[in-house]
Image 1 (cartoon, rainbow, N blue to C red):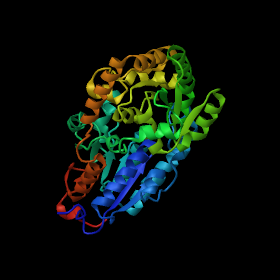
Image 2: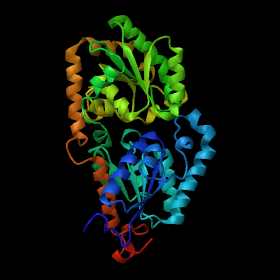
Image 3: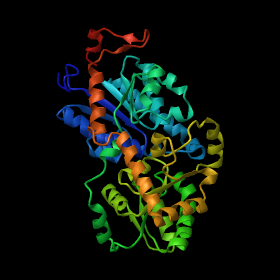
Image 4: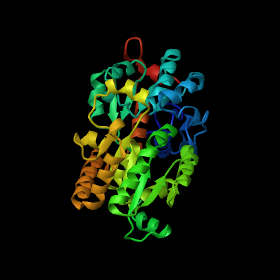
Length: 412
């Protein structure tokens, strides 16, 4: 049976993302679904520019939902909840064959819960398992009440969710398929007038305004301290549309030349050209690992948010490479440890000690292979998993058993 023969009609698949990272995943997923269904799948839902570029007509912009931190979220709660209702009610009204919630659990899980409550027979899948194993392990059992399946980016997540009563499939981390062909680094240097001997530092202060607010002063000071120790650095700041204006304003206030890029291909070229990176914790650390770029990771939250979150953290590390390897291969500093002195000391080490650089690159390569590098593209595996779920009998939510095949094949 081909991938498209999931129902007696071309499938309607609803995708819901809530922030830029989910938009990137959703864009890749749409492209894979289009390949596997020969473009016959109808894709609907919520996404950003990358998902729209792949063919999605989004119900609304991600500006209302892409927020983080108590102070930032609180004033926008009414707007966010209105968007939750809008997305869920769209699913209930249009009855897609399957709804896939992509990342952003604070937003997408609310959508999933409302869909489950109003239309319990609809299939709802989570793509990108929330890191409940890091902070709230009991939440995995609660997720089983409103999700039918979870697509995991990390191999160790499958048994975790399976043990909690939620079916799970490892599809690999989409970051491994984002990199263009090698060779962009030298071109980047030539394009920006940088010699082979100039040291390049990539600065990545986050993709949210509040991340930049907390990290920019610390990162800027760390770079200045590093230059005092090792000499001049060429700073490149890749950014994204939703924070680009703020980043450019901060760069203008910094009395030095800085290269700012917004294009994703140019960002990856900068990664390849860089000698070292200073980055906020997040997906970008895995992208840097993919390019074998030595890095130092820092992260800060607002004091109130950090105080509330700290008791719930159950993991030793925040960087994915470290989590996979279960050791501190990548230097990372969180909250009060995220200081200019600490960051600068590690940056200086990576710029002056070749053994430290080799050790980190070797560790990054090991972790990236564990995320699926060398296998089928994760987005294709995720798309196959979604289309396979369409062939399975629907789950009877009352008995938690598979419904009769005839019910599963009933047109939505």
